[in-house]
Image 1 (tube, rainbow, N blue to C red):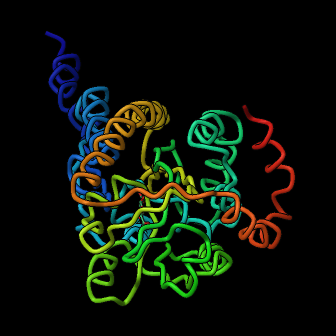
Image 2: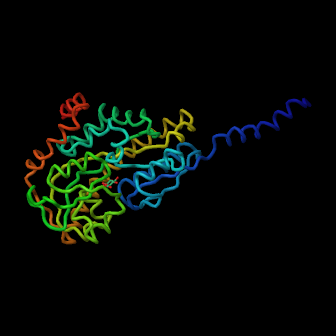
Image 3: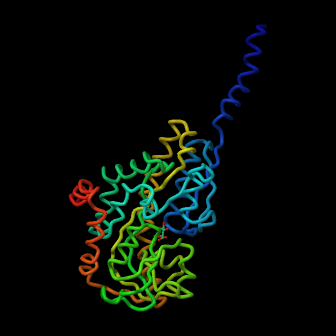
Length: 324
Ligand code: BDP
């Protein structure tokens, strides 16, 4: 009997075990401020399931919907140190740290939701994801989710631009949005998503602005019954991974993560359309008045914002406008 061979045969399974263990089971925390059942959250859960299957259990996921790990800003900070591995965030709050992305955050930059989708599905969408990844932000931007169209909701009706005068309206923490709200005659106030409900309730703010699913699912409609269809922002939302985590993945795993994120992008879009329509119905049934406004005055009022911020994006804006 060949002793050496026997020894090797005995050691083999062990070696495999160790080699396996080296990259085995990475548990990834996936955070979202939206509640369970929200289109983004459902698509994220399915993305995780697909990845666990494809990696034969090397990547497993733990979900933290409902903002339990903190605001989007706080989650990003945790991702930058690798404490949280994945999230979906609004581009609104990425703007102040990666100014390049602010081109998508400009009021009325997209003609409508379909235009936005066509842009993010094309080379400009990839370019902006790349800007996030290649910045000092510490995140890898994998794909886009749809965040619908944002309209203004208030305690007192806004039927025309002038009605907004002096109203305190919550916006995301991005100086461009404060300027935007002020340019429309309101008084822009930045706060985290989780603070809006009580700020509306106590009258700290007179309104906010968001898409129908957020207005519904975050219960803001309970204290803001007028929804003016201004459509001033159409913000896509990147799925991002901590760079620290990304660098721990094998090239194969990185590819699988990218692919799964792109699949989540497609799935969320379908879920989004359904959820948006259902939310509109529910909001109306709950007594929210949907107000059709003439968008032109809102567009004209925000020209100063596009002028103030637009110069560095002149080329990109041309490319965006050229997308049909
Ligand atoms: C929602 C976005 C979410 C933002 C929120 C907000 O999906 O990412 O944090 O708006 O305005 O539409 O805070």
